[in-house]
Amino acid sequence: MQTSIREDLPQPDVVALDQNKQVVLVAEVKAFPSAFSNASIRNTGITQVLKFLSRINYIVPYIMLADTNNIFIYRWDGKNASEPILNLRTVDVLSYYEPEFNQKQIFNLYLTGLVEAWISDFCYHWKSEFPPAYQEISDIGLMEKLEGGITEP
Image 1 (cartoon, rainbow, N blue to C red):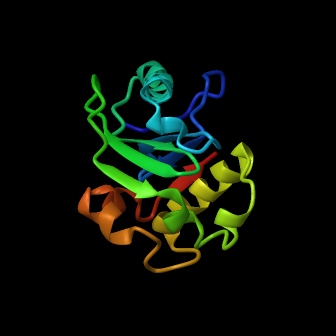
Image 2: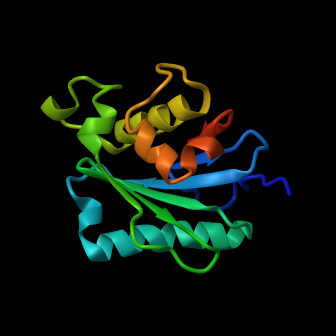
């Protein structure tokens, strides 16, 4: 089943497609420190992503919430999001793409671009054969789904 993203729907910040153009990950990004550490904001972020997923009527296996402190990855079974299956420090991941990540203010559009760059690096290794958190992303089964895919902002 090929999935196309309808432009008239509210969109997540980043969508990753596998090599068969199937959506495998949707990400919501907020450029606030620890935005998604707050349970209320985290639930709002997940709810927003789930509304999008219910409207495209397709099970997407992974949901990502990223803020300037943390990147949380969840599994989604079509009805419920799991507890985070992976929690990464944003600076550890994204400073590879922006060496001054911890020394300057990061705005939402730029943070979204950095997250997309990182995910794209898993898809077609534009910067590194082994992007940051490669092992962790492999361990949860996401690497094999991203390999050969693309991202859409």
